Amino acid sequence: IGKDVNGADLPSGKRVKLFVESEPSDATPQPDLVVCLHASFSDAEPGSLAAWLPLLAPLLGTQGGGDSSEGIAQRQPVVAVSSRCEAEAKAATALFERLGSKVLLRSVRNLFSGMAAGPHAKYDDHGWVTAVQGSNLAEDALAKLDIEAFCAAAPAPATDAAVRVERSERSAAVFWGILDLKYDPALDLDRRVKVLETGDGRS
Image (cartoon, rainbow, N blue to C red; front, top):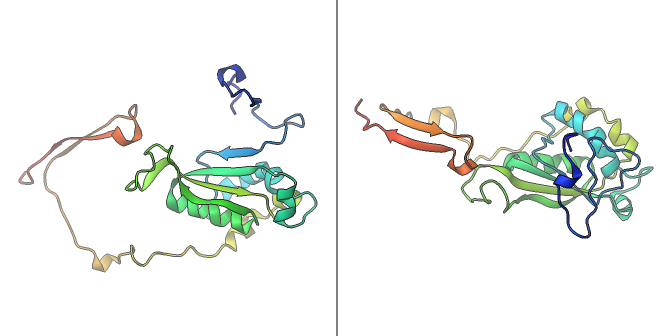
């Protein structure tokens, strides 16, 4: 949470105690749930993983090693990650599985997303949620993980042959006319682009 946020501005429930800190400290209690909004967790982005993993290590890693069930028994928090597209969510799930985490939610559609989990939305703010808990790696091992080697050893992502079309099989298409669009970033995500006018194709 940013340093400019005041705890009084974030009303919580009767049974919720709110801590507003830009960085965790020894006085910060262990949370039950950690939510990472639009965080890129992928083997293909070692830079992002290198920035996040030291923060996630004390939340996922077991104390002194052991398997994931032992870590979960120690009440490790659930870590939930929101993603903008299904491919990003699946990449996050695969990454956490490689880290030895127990997957609780596997790339699930979020009804409270920007597009309200619309079935035709390919991209959606907070549209997919992945939730994991614990790791079979120790906290120190996670914090000191060789990110470059870890990402380089990742298996190649599977491609969907049903949706992949070779360039030689594609049909060329040309629209010759006017297409007048208006983009307003102040509107809701599904209302930002509006078609004002289309030509008759004879221009």
